[in-house]
Length: 150
Image 1 (spheres, rainbow, N blue to C red):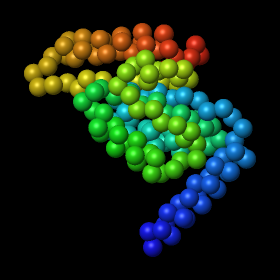
Image 2: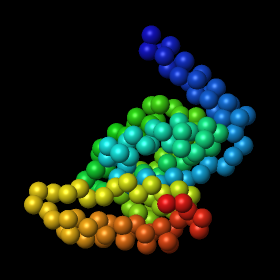
Image 3: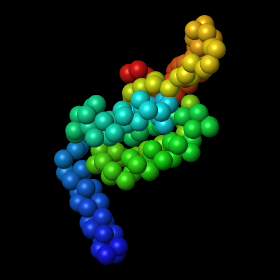
């Protein structure tokens, strides 16, 4: 039974590749998502991959950015996206390096931020997140497409 499932999956993959080549002549766009292992990003990623964000004829390369402690969780998200075999997903890059995550991106969804901790005042939270977004902004300035939409 398992060998039959593998054969069926291979046939489906081959069919998907042919379908994509025939239907979509568009070049893939690169979409960066920060905090990619978080709950908000998790819900967005599957919508992007299915074509709900950019259209059902727009191939995408997902560039997922996370902090080092969350990389293991991000690998699980990548496996789920891969298991879904979305026709529009041409590639997935998972990284904790902003320069890699923002390289040549056409769209950037800056969802990741530091959550408010116990006893943390609003000022502290704003300072912590300002530092995060500053690093990301500099990286996008240096590495993203000149026409990036944030």
